[in-house]
View 1 (cartoon, rainbow, N blue to C red):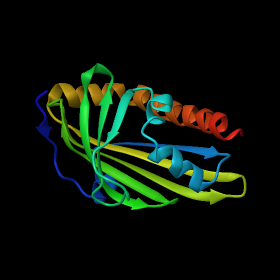
View 2 (cartoon, rainbow, N blue to C red):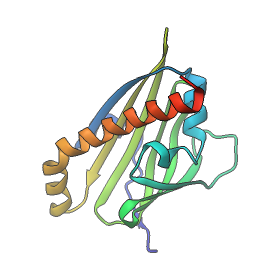
View 3 (cartoon, rainbow, N blue to C red):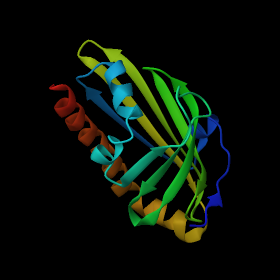
View 4 (cartoon, rainbow, N blue to C red):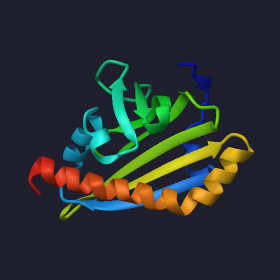
Length: 166
């Protein structure tokens, strides 16, 4: 499969991207347990239903520069590199390459805050589409995508409750 380069964006892109989706959820697990879930390649397809497979491609310990490959529905593959990895509070990654030419730049940011009942997750998906059709699709699809991404976090909450007996 031919991979196409994406812009090597940094953490600033999370705030400045032309398309940003911010979703939040309260989880009844500790930040440590949430990071356990996020580090588990098998967990992602369970809650982020667009994902079919996650493969870590660099050895542990995980940190800035760690890489993985994510396979998604529709045959889309992304090679990711982590821009932030602060255990139990913050992780972020970008696409270095993607199997589709419609993504100019893509990054995700996960921020975790401990709460009395567990933790609060804020997830930001930031992207810059490439080409008119992709931009148009993003503009028209924005409400549906926002709903879908929030739904992933409700799935994550259900997954965590089942995994940790919440």
